[in-house]
Image 1 (cartoon, rainbow, N blue to C red):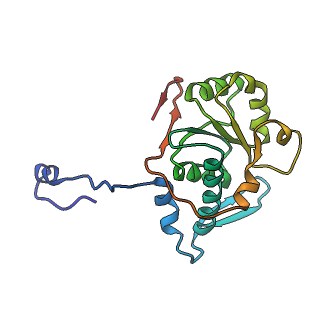
Image 2: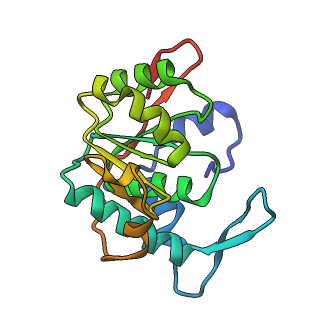
Image 3: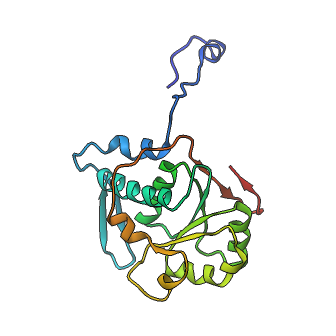
Amino acid sequence: MLQKAASYEELRGAFRWQVPEHYNIGVDVCDRHASGDRRLALVFQDEGATVRRFTFDEIKAQSNRFANVLAAHGLVRGDRLAILLPQAPETAIAHVAAYKAGLVAVPLFTLFGEDALEYRLGNSGATALVTDRTGYAKIAAIRERLPDLRHIYLIEGSGGAALAAPSVRDAAGFARRGNTGFRRAPRPRLRCFHPGGDARR
């Protein structure tokens, strides 16, 4: 927060960045608001007009569970987690989990075709991906050309051929079950691909 000053020069001269020793954006946007009072964080209405509501406490618990899963599967700070999902609560939860685990989130546009996805997943070195069945249908066609991609998490984990494939796991089940405690990692990052095709952090 800027303080009042008599001039711009005085304001500029007195300004100092207040950077905490340890900071995690996943904690900042979620956990610090999760006080146990069921404060509303997110309201989502799908195309069928079904409304789902999530409290900060629920998002904290689900993102912690998924962050634990990512860590248990060997992902470490700096690894890339690609997120190929439409606008939905699971998208937000995946991002918060990635940040808590110190991973670099790589958001992917759901309208990307196979070539665009192959380039971005390959160029980013993504080791894991969160997607739905629509996204997985595209990924399955290029999976053999993505040697770094070791883990795929489906948010629709009710069964089917996709979950029978190697390293494809039920993200929805992980988010509902498991340990809700998580020790956050510092300095998570976001990697975005701009229309020109270059990646910038």
